[in-house]
Length: 460
Image (cartoon, rainbow, N blue to C red; front, side, top):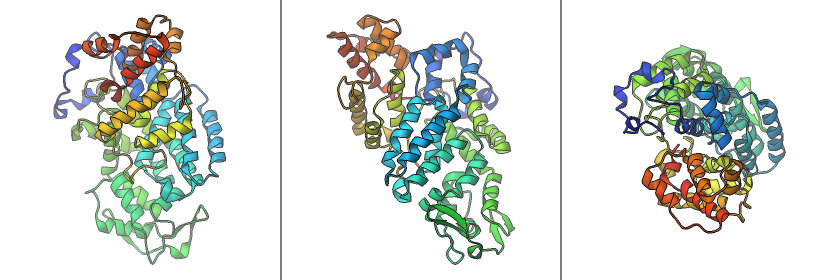
């Protein structure tokens, strides 16, 4: 667990020294490398961990573990190629419902969980709706594009997606004529993807729309029609020239607002969605990120930092439905029927391939209210049931016994360490453990349900 003097509310972000914040965390007697910090790392850089992963992480320490999470030794390319083929065969369907199970299976089985975590993040950043695109094959290709650069380079990702057919269709830019430039696509690029509101003008949008003329989506393919391109000079973000679509991307990447926006969004994912970082905290990362737009380097810097392993970050995010559910599944070392899981996650508000708006899922407290809290508990109950709908795939007793905990009481304590790394108030621990036991296997399912329904388990 965190030391007693570290579990107090985090200090005002304005008082934190940026140099200390982004320096690598070095375990010591005051801030030891322990089960709580190992679990924290896997909640943020993956979808939770099983017991063997937690124990390996304790042995390896933070530096080696983070290196492995960023670049695992397994053949990730072969794994993804296999799943790409599965998706391609499912893309003949007219609904992204056929794609959801394959992505969930990737998340459950991938040797590179951080890659899938980041792919999901970018899906919320470049948020498209399959219902609007109405082409399952194009939606599959779009997510594969995200995955290909999820830990690569943002400039490459931005360039590719600015000409992605699914993106253009979602942004009403499937026919970008010289006589009627589409303003929706450049507006999304500036407002949501790169600059943020307040860092551009309506004139910038209008001129950028002219730069994107000539691009069409015809039979699912992007084509450039030269006669439809507006070749006159344009004034965009303070610069003038005969700009085209590639120039717009270049100009966006030059603006200091772009790396700042991305650093802040990744801060919410990896550090905290509770406390807004100060400009002083953001600026060093924004400047270094702008040099090459290396996503893995930025993510690695955040994960290794003192700030990441401090109370500023610890349990300072609410798990999304995907994170909540996969945290249970990963901990109990199994896979579950993904078709049903996709439907249940959609009911909880996280429908893969169908974010609610172009801003993605709002996250944070939007995930938790009386209705969704009950729905989460009901989904956890279904997952842990020995019967349908999840066919008893998750068996807490079998996992506990596998790791040497044969009695009911020992198995219950094991589950507290597995799911919460033992980091709960004494009164909560006693309440979880203090009840009459019936048949051991069924009782342990009940205990597991109590644990994953606790407020602490809802936090990443």
